[in-house]
Length: 102
Image (cartoon, rainbow, N blue to C red):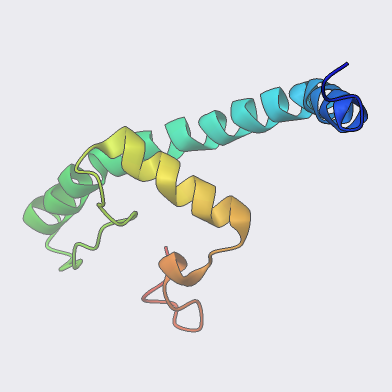
C-alpha cells in the first residue's frame, strides 16, 4: 500500500467526523431555532418602536437588536447567534443600565 503509515490517521479522522455528525445536527437545529426567533423579533421591532412613539408618545429610542452586517435579517440573526454561541456578549450592550438592556 502506498500510504500505509498514514492510513490509520485517515481512518481515524473519517470515523471521528462520522461520530460527531449527530452532535452537529443537534447544534444546527438549536442554532436555527434561536435564529428564527431572533429574526422574527427583529423584523417587527422597528415598526413596534414607531407605533409606541407615535400612538403612545413614549419617546423610545430605536436601536437595532442585532448588528446589521449582511443587510439580510435572517443572516444577521444567524451571525449574531453564532457569535453568542461562541461566547460573544459585547453585542448585548450594557447590562448594568436598565435603560440599555433589552
